[in-house]
Length: 378
Image 1 (cartoon, rainbow, N blue to C red):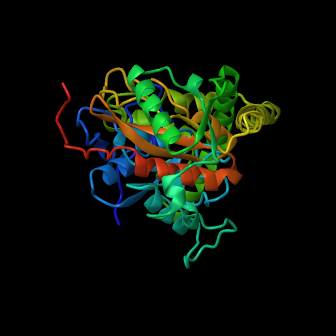
Image 2 (cartoon, rainbow, N blue to C red):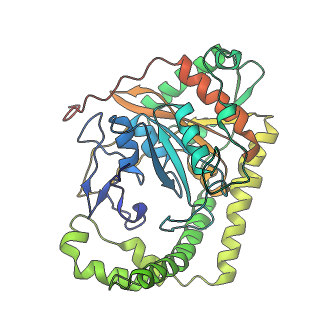
């Protein structure tokens, strides 16, 4: 057992942050090229699995913080549906979206850890959720060699942010077609209204939940640590040489100053559910008669930049994150020597198809080359 280095405050501290950097542990690095980002916020967890330091690791996600580092580090990541796992122990951003989830070198191992985290298989804290490991096709299983009978949607409009990613996704779809799956292109696209509503919800929930968390933690150990978001901001200012040597805390300050009342919050939360669920993934699954929905997890890892921050180009984590629906990222291959993942998502009832597609694709695609810990790809 060990701890890994994560993005400070789960990358919810500044718009100019560097993923994988914290004042506690410094900068985590991508094992495929050490000058490249590990993405975040579960940076060190994905890096540790990719680097062979451990077979499995735990990450957390509010929006993309499991599937994005899984994608750029070449490992499997699962963002489960809301409510499958307890939120106990998670430093909160959003009480409606936060969830832990597994990172591992294979779909099978990731699901084993997810079941263990769910309190299944003899572990202490029991969950009402059914175990998922039995849904992963085993070696030699007909379901691992054929996806005949499955209808999969591809959200092409969630791509287009990197030509190499688009080419790898086209090759991945060909693999799935070769396994017998029917692939249809859907019209799911980015939504500015959803992004705005999600940000409102996150600011409101972050301030309320973090204040409660800090007060509870401070009372438990009677230390002079920050007891509120306001005290945290003041602490960072007083220790700026160590806590803010590269980027500030503009998101923390925005959350502290945001004048979002309960009615505005409830309206934003309702918009999130309508846009991400009813008009988003629910509609996609029904209108196109899908068993699961596919999309690119993201672009290849960008260079670490402590001056300008992350150079994030795009991804597909938003809809399942806001909807509270499951999302599985499986390595699809390399683009210019850097990993990129294929995301497989759906409704909470879509687990059988999601895991079957993930395991079959993993078995059929060319083996992913291991990281060589290159100083740079240049």
